[in-house]
Image (cartoon, rainbow, N blue to C red):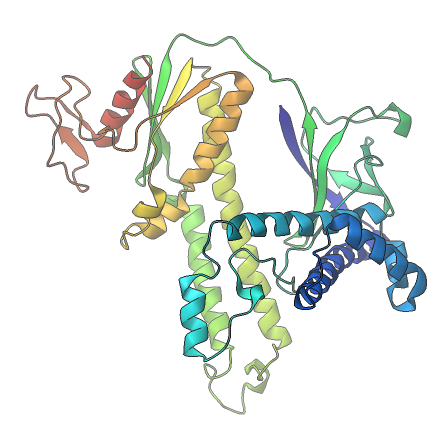
Length: 420
C-alpha cells in the first residue's frame, strides 16, 4: 500500500526564488504545449504527445535566448508538466467519445452573446493556467529526492530545511543509503507555506481485530454516532464549538470589509480615497484584507479536517472486525436550502474517505449499507418500520414495542446489525 506524507519546507530567500521559478516553468510548459497543440489543430496537423513536445522544447532552450531561463529549472519538472498536459488530453478525448461535445450551459451562454463555439469550449478540454488563479505547484524528481535529519534534498534547489511530525519518515545520513522510492513528489505553495507531499510503498499494518462490528450514523447535530458491542458513543460537531463560531463570525466581518472596498460599495468621499478600488486594479489595503479572509478560511478548514482525523482514528483504534457506513446521497441532501451549509461543513465525504483508507491499512472490512436502507425508520429492537418519521423527530418512539431511543443512536444500532 501507498502511504502519503506531507512536510513543510523552510527555504532560504535564494531557495524560495528557485521554488517559484520551478512553479513558473511548470505553468509555462503547460500553456506553451496547450497553445502549440491548439494551433496544430487549426492547421489540421497531428496532435503531439509529451514526447513530441519535449523534443521541440529542448531545441527551443538551445536556440532561443528568450527561453534560456528554463535551464535553471529541473528538466524532469518540465517533462512532468508535459506529461500532465498529455494526460489531460487523454481524459478530454475519452469524454468526447461519449458523444456530447458542448455543455448545455455553454451553448446557451454563447447563443445569448451571439458568439461561435470553439474547440476550446468543448467539455473536458484542457484550460490555460493563470498566474493568479492556478495552484502554485511543481513536480520534484524522485530519483534525487532523499531526507536527512534536518534537510531534504531537491534537484536544482539543494538541501532545504523542513518540519515534520512523522515518526516513520525514511531519514538517511547519506544520499547513497536511500533505497526508498518516492511516489509522485510534488511541492505546493499553500497559504504562505511550501509543502512537499509524496507517497511511499509500505506494508499494511494489520492488527489483531475484535469480534464485533461498528455501525456509524453520520449527521448534522453530531458528526457521528457509533454503536458497537453493546456500547455507544457520539462525536461532537466541531462547527458548534465556541472556537469555530468565533472564527466564522470574524470571517463574516472580514468578508463584509472586503466587499465595501470594491468599486461602487465605498462612499465616494474625500476622507477615504485610498479605500476605493479603481477599475481593473486592487489597492494594497484590499489585497491585505483578502489575504486575511483566505487565512481565516484555511484556519477553519484545518480545524475541521483535524477533527475528522481524530474521530476516524479513534474509531479505527477500536479494532473492530468490520465497519458499516451509510451510502449517503450528499448531492441530494445539499438541495435542502435549510441544511445545505451545515451538511457542507461536516465534510461527510472526507470522513468516509478517511475511514476507508485507514480501515484498509488496519485490515478492517468496510461494509456500505444500501442507499435506501431505512436505518432511521427501522426499530433497532423489534424491526418495525415507522413510515411517518420526520426529520424534526429527534427521538424514535416505536409503536410496536414501545422503544424510545435517540434517532441517530437507533440508526447506528441498525447499521451495526448489517455486518452480522
